[in-house]
Image 1: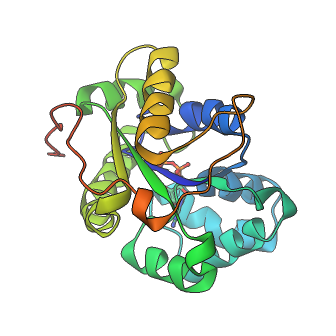
Image 2: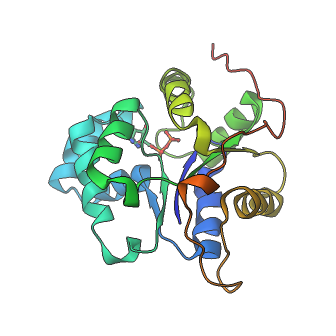
Length: 216
Ligand code: ADP
């Protein structure tokens, strides 16, 4: 199954992605993780990305897209993948659809959400290098300005999930929604089902009231 998970910084995408990739038997591909490992290995790509990571800015599409294309060419993506952090802009989404073609494009998009206060608390507690108040605000602002067009673009694939509460509960919510709305089959429960265009979720009701995005 070919999935993307999207949501604001600190909402728990990384944690949930690991659980989900295990449950569905597909690799978790996080552009943030890829950039960080390139940066710590001081590869050419890592050096080019570093300054953007430090500032909380988006890495230019040419660098990002090339890295994703390279990762997706690996054999472990044959049965699908879970993209985390990509596509992050409409341009990246268009590039992705064009280069992958319909057979390799996304089948469902999980939107994980939580109120702003909770996100800030989680990020400050996590304390990654770029989890400092000013940089967090910059990343949240970028999320707010670049994500809405993406949500509109993927409207008929969108599966909104409440990201508050215990990790295990959020995981169950995601898995249940994916199984019911997008035909996902968790590992060990049967043959993975191919999704056809007709089985894409078309009309999505928000599962819970959306938080309002205001970043000071
Ligand atoms: P967060 O979502 O909390 O900012 P990520 O680990 O997803 O954390 O990303 C960390 C950084 O990696 C971003 O601030 C950005 O610099 C870079 N990055 C990740 N994904 C992309 C992308 N698709 N396009 C451009 N830059 C990206």
